[in-house]
Length: 215
Ligand SMILES: C[S@@+](CC[C@H](N)C(=O)[O-])C[C@H]1O[C@@H](n2cnc3c(N)ncnc32)[C@H](O)[C@@H]1O
Image (cartoon, rainbow, N blue to C red; front, side, top):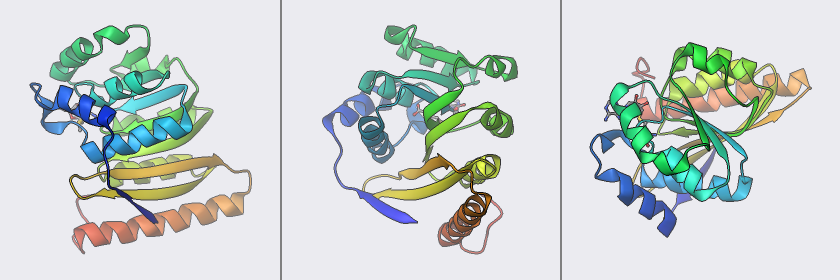
């Protein structure tokens, strides 16, 4: 797995981080390093559609809406976060679609997502949501989220091959980027799944030692 160092943080990243990190309920917002990775992805990918799981108080949603032209579909179900989220995203009305439960998810406005951001649940819905989509291009997992990474690989393995990179930064934890390519060759897909399964397992061993219960 490629390891990529984040050494510098752009002013736009710091601006959004500063806007959010003193807010009530900001204990779990994304790190500066992760936001820098997403900033780089936004610039290289120029996404038109983004799907975000675990929007919290809306730091990453705000950041994406501010830094690209994409429509963002986001999941959040915590009552406190929902109230803060709506307040924080008030100037972006019409550019985002918020879903909070299973029924909403069935009416997701898009079938293809250029970027999927995973910073929370609903884990139980991942397989069904991913299987209902026509295409996804890049997934970013904030932090480690090993369980979510495995659920994504499992759900996507029948259609995609993957390339995973790990991002590290000296000042904060970052995350993992998974580039997904639809691949008709079942042998290459199987190889990609096994290879990525093994390197992710090795990565978990590196992080957790042999105590692998909490992934
Ligand atoms: C890591 S947080 C997501 C943070 C989000 N990406 C952000 O940067 O603002 C993951 C989940 O934790 C829950 N959460 C986050 N902040 C919370 C708070 N202050 N109170 C209760 N739950 C919270 C939410 O349900 C959210 O989906």
